[in-house]
Every structure is written in C-alpha cells, then in structure tokens.
Length: 346
Image (tube, rainbow, N blue to C red):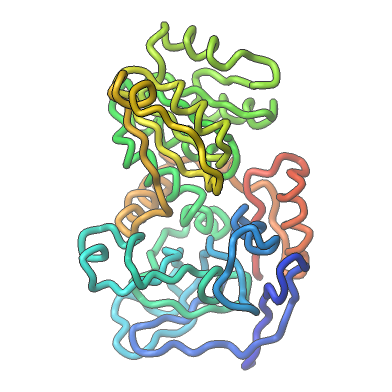
C-alpha cells in the first residue's frame, strides 16, 4: 500500500476534505510515524475558520499526535519500528541558541505540525527523530496524544510562573488545557487551587481532579469569592486559558502582592494596562507563555506513567478520521462540554 487518507484544509470556512495521498518517506534523520491518535484542538477550529492563518493550502491539520514508528531514515539511532511515540509539534533547527538552551519554542526556523507543515489528521506523517518521545504501553495512544499540547502547554505555563509550595493558584477556563492545569498546579505543590468556568459540569470535574474551590461567574461574584477564599490576599499565580480581554483582566486583578499572571489564551485585541496600579503597586508580574519546549516532555511522560497525572478524564470522545468534521463542529459548539475529542486510527 502506497497511499493513505488525510483530512485536509483545502479552503478556509469549509469542512476538511478526506483525501488520498502518497505515504511520505523518511529522509536521513527522520522517522515515519503511523498515527494512532490525534487530538482536536481549538486551534484547529481557528485554522479552519480563518481566525488564525495556516501558511499553505491545502494542508493536513492536527498537532496533538501519538503513534508508532513505521520506518526509520538513514542515521536514526533512537528508535526502531514499532516503538510508541508522541510528538513535539514544533519542527526546529536544533542548532540555534534557543534550541540549545531549552527554548526551542522560540527557534526562528520553527515550523508547526498542522499549521506550517502537514500534521497528524492522517494515517502517516514524517518528523525528525528529535521530535519523537517514547512512552510506555501503560499510556493509551489517545491520552498520549493529549500530552503533547493539552498537558504540555499548561505545564510549560505554570513552570514559567514558578509555582511554589503553598501558592494559591487560579485557573481560568476548564477546557482541554484547564483540566490539566488544575492537576499540574497540585503536583507543583499549590495550596488552594481555584477553578473558574461557566459550565457546572466542567467545574464539577475540576473539583474531582484537585481544585479546592470553584467559581461560576454566571452565579458568583468572582472578586468577592477570591477574596474570601484567599483571606483577602489574592492568588499567587493566575493562569488564563481563554484569550479574552475580560478574563485576562480578571486574572491580573485576582493576583495579590508579588502575584504572577501567565497568559496562554490567544487574544488578538489590545487592552489597557496601568503600570502603577497593575504592576508597580503590588510588584505583580505578567507573563506570556507560548507552546512548550522539548525539555517539558520527559517530565510529563514520567508523571503520566507513574499515575501522578490522571488522564482518565481527558478524552471525552474518540472518532474515526471519516468523522473529523463532526468532531470539529462538536468542539466549536461545545456540545456535551468536551474536554478533548480525539481522532483515532485502527
């Protein structure tokens, strides 16, 4: 068999098209991965709708990927056919200062799977050997796929925020990222973990996986609730995962003296900031966090393998590739409050 099926974005604003393509072949230093699972992320909807731009059309979307090594190019020494791998979704040069200092998400040559180059909504794809990380049989493919973004992105963000033992942490947005942010904050030693969302179901899940308090802005006064929960101190760390000026402002205002706000949600709008009130007066810090680093992967995989990171609540639905547009629509409309919908391959 020389061909494979792939879900391609051919035109923005249109459903993905299932297309037959030639199976790519690995060059020197590359591996051919037989995809077994690929998570559907909100970013995929943004690319489909044209809210975020891909750099070529047509393109195979999908950047949360786990599978098996199908073949190895010349010089590959880390893997053999049959190895289970999950993929770091930024293909970088591996040689620049950023790559060599663990900040490869800032590599000027970085190309993202499913945005700049063909991604994982396909039966096979080729990646450099250095983009693959092995994981044990105890982790199902569908959960391993989520580790590459839905877990790695909040892990990277909370690491940047330098969560310390006893810190009060606020998580705004309990979706695919927020569900894992709650757990990661707990693993990092957070004291009180406060979850904010509009969905009672998502807040119930947050409590189940480690949140010590939950707030629904439709029912609660957020400022008053946080003041009571933290004894008037405010939170030490707020992570914003939605990407709205309103929720970013809420995150900043919720932090107390020395508080750190880390913004992960993509917000294209400008917002007002008062340097004296928002930063200087309470010595607050506002951080941005983009993607993740290769250095995050071994830690995440180890946490999942040891059961410290519980991914049993992470996959809401598994669908075959033929139903990918149904999955995208479900996530877009938030039908049944999905955490993550995953495309799986037999």
